[in-house]
Length: 204
Image (cartoon, rainbow, N blue to C red):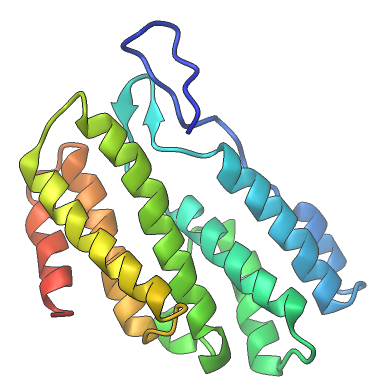
């Protein structure tokens, strides 16, 4: 957790950084897929390391670019370690790379079975990242509804990690949709809390 606040009541965990995948895109047609994947992991890891959800003391929503960067990092890591990358795996990996700049996430139905665990672990990592900043924010801005609902997401994170990420992609998507809704509620959208709870209830 990073705090570069200018005074005791102004915190920053989010830096104004951009994820530049240009070197990755340029290497797709010339370099082996494992090398492209390794480069992708490095780019995404550095971006995620500098990202957070508190800026100027204000909580920010969970954004699509962060979500896709984390997912791409986990998927690329799996691709880089694989002894043999299938066409479906390569197609999904490249779709993440190309769609990230547009903020257009692939549908859960397109996730190859062999990459479902990587996607699941990415969702767990996203939950943990948002939980850290949300907990910090709630220490100064208490909200029992937010804290209780976040606790349910933490339970799902623990379950995902216990299963090494092996959950159905549609379940992972429901969890993520709910977490995004909770982040909207925590930043002022009162109607979003019901959406977050509905997504969680659908998994019970």
